[in-house]
Length: 368
Image 1: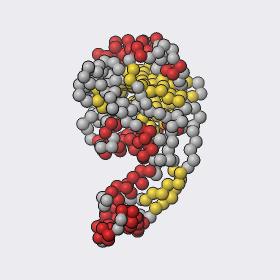
Image 2: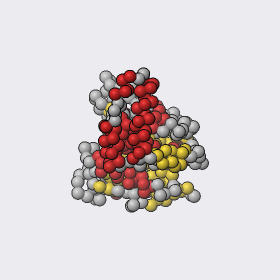
Image 3: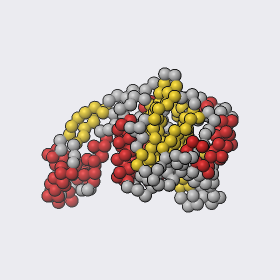
Image 4: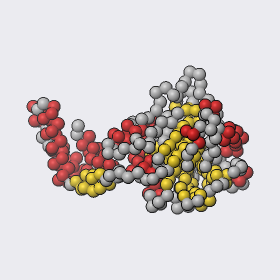
């Protein structure tokens, strides 16, 4: 949807992903290759054959198309205009295609092959990928989880020459069971972790990253991706109407395998979601020194014991101390109780250990 004259999603509507990452894991540093800053463009804004937009290994476009049949002509026009600027996408990732088995093969783009998954029992929904015809590809059924009306996805392995990449599209349907959807995101990424290929995922997740610090499920989704070393590339609103702007569409990459990336959001009336793109170069995998992480193995039984013992502690002496002394005393007490029921384990990990530390903080925060 085009922006209205009295509303501008560009004003103070973005998330500083790099700062958020630093707050989650201070040891992780992707600044050399990863700077998620996704400007808004119109097609006319993009300069002709500029190396910033043309010299990339993989060019990926994601769109919540909201009916491929009704939007196909406008999609074709936009792609033709972008091709005239020197941008020819390798993969066009679509959700809400609203197709069925009868008409799914009717919307062919010259120079592309189309692979899809449609609903069979309910209207609307559906996901698909246009793949540039320079690639050979196979559908990866074991990752393409498709629970109609909840979580709909499709994944392919695309190969050209000696290089392969896994590309997928995920659509999480709004106002459905969040727990099940998050479990499916994690299941998808768990299976993907067994593959050696580089990974690119487009998704309409219907969880607004602008509210990541206020909405637990949104933070949980970010952490699921982050624990699998997948990072979002879009940091500004992708769905805009007269009085709201939400960041619910994204393209995820493995930042430690990426040497350069350009991202952006295209202002167009194709649907009420703006198309988003990522232009990616995958270079030599970056190496990171292992970090020794201390974590505790916690479950509901252990947490209940910790909470029970903390409730029996006498905290009266805190009122007689200054702030520094009180903080030190409180921390030592809590640490001693934690050590009693859940001793720290040490292991070398890249990122996943941070999740256990977050749960430590959850226990302590109840007694601040």
